[in-house]
Length: 425
Image 1: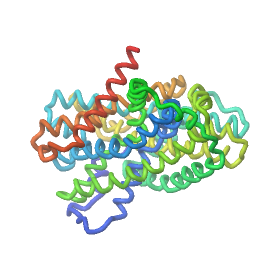
Image 2: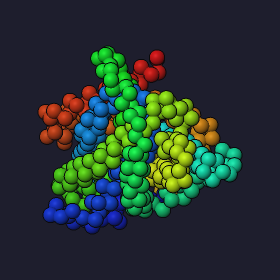
Image 3: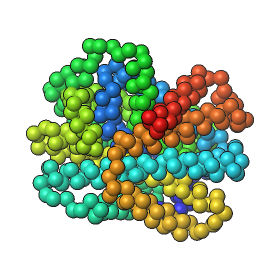
């Protein structure tokens, strides 16, 4: 990837813009945020959320917008509280010191990098299933297929952050239309599905247990924290003192769009497939789109669903690469080494390629990775760190005393305790 700092420096004028009108750049970022969030997590959400039953899914749907918006707004404000041009790794060091900065930078990297691994597995499975079931050709050996796919995405990454964000925002338009089309297409096929579990309201203890374990998947499904740092830096550069207000407006619109779209799609899927079929999809380690393509004897859906899944996963991979590479470069620089920008880019790309390829070849359980790696680790960065900063950092003192802080902290603790339970259970 081209030198990120130079890319950011050249992107905007030095004079802050006003809030008088909504700009094309605001729309680009809104769709870029949407594009980062809607990927493998979303395509696996109907499976995991549907297996929990009707009432837990309804509660999770009600929590989706506040959980997503308040958390990402907190992380954006955290980055905005730093010096001009500082990304999240710089702001952490600025507020918490060098040692704490290095620790949280490490955590930030390990919160995002596993997501790239998840997308690598999901992409390989989606393309392999499409070749086998829809094209009726034998896919190449898994190791070769994974290598070609990941190498292709990294070729896009080499074009730089600005090209990534623009490409993702352009890919969102056909994706929204396709996802909406598929959700509407499923309506005549609704057979009750998850409603069979609505007749009995679960006991409070069982309901809380189901919600507890489902929250990490929800956190992951709507997560776009890897691109928040670049987003906040750009907002501060473009809007100056108005960056907090405009970034909140962009975030609220992006989250409303993603929550409405995703929940409509989720409910359409779980009203079409039975709990037994959702369990089968989980066992096959396929996204809901690939399972639907194999389930329906309809050539349009058979071809469209895997292609939608491919676009969703590919654009989310690109968005998460920004955050993962940012964290890895921060770790390298904090060791005291100062390689050139191009050398650091090449080292980062080579490391990502090798590890993503190995994991995609091994094909571990995607939902298992989400439950034990993705959601809970992200929660510590996305939910808890900004709330801690609000209490401790003078630059964020103006945000203290808000009820949303308690809500965000509670969701973060739920996600992390679910990880501990899954590891010792």
